[in-house]
Length: 381
Image 1 (cartoon, one colour):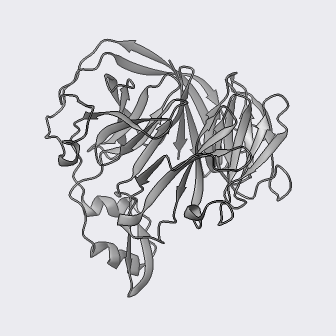
Image 2: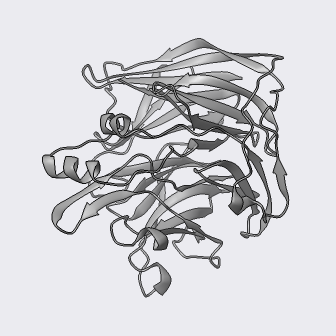
């Protein structure tokens, strides 16, 4: 396989995308044995892998191609990186409210859309997704998804994701986020309530399919605990989001979708109708959570927030998982939090959970997309 990763330097406003080849050979590894979590003991069709599972191979990443800023473009904050079947790279730019397109050899090709409120224009790009025929650009302030044709890069159609009582009462006040494009005709959409509107036990995500005309065409597929965590005090007018909150991550293919609660490395598989099929579990040693370490990671802007954090009760450990990706060959790429503050340990797994390899990779080089044997990584400086 190949690896592509991107470097963004805020001082010089330079972004570099680097392609690397991936060499594979046999290897082995050891893991500390841990007990099975209580909540998994009654889960059906669960495959449990031993703590000392040996990987099938060992991988080395070798840089191959670099994408960088050009005279005609300076990349701002990214809102998604996707790749089409011809190897073109699309980068959503939240600052310029446009989508930059690079050819597979790293040269700059063109941009799609611009700032504005007219047809095909963006107020705020939230995310971009790739289909077989269209590039789909989600704009949350407008509550729409714009679909652009790969034939001429012109706007094909726009879908509204604003759902009120006239469409479905259950989603009134919920915000949408596109999780997957199915055959360019149907969206799998996650709906969630704003984090500060509901208590932790009621914070959830709901999955529905939505047609390109903006109609919900499924029953509720799955309701997942959203998680996340923030600190607040009614006597202090401040709210502080913390990085150690647990949440449910989602990965999707045409036939299935997969969930992972970040507390543990356990992946559940569902069919396209939301019926549970199976799960697998790998025991992973959790990193101890220390208050001084968290202080370095969160953005505390005033003395009230500092007081709020110092007087809060912390969990004993960090969650196990940070990132959860599915590539086009139905293989998982999962990053786990380790003692080294500068790195993650990435797990490369088959769909059924067999370990292909583990490797240490810098946090500043975040793997975001995997397709056609290439890994696309966003590096932030």
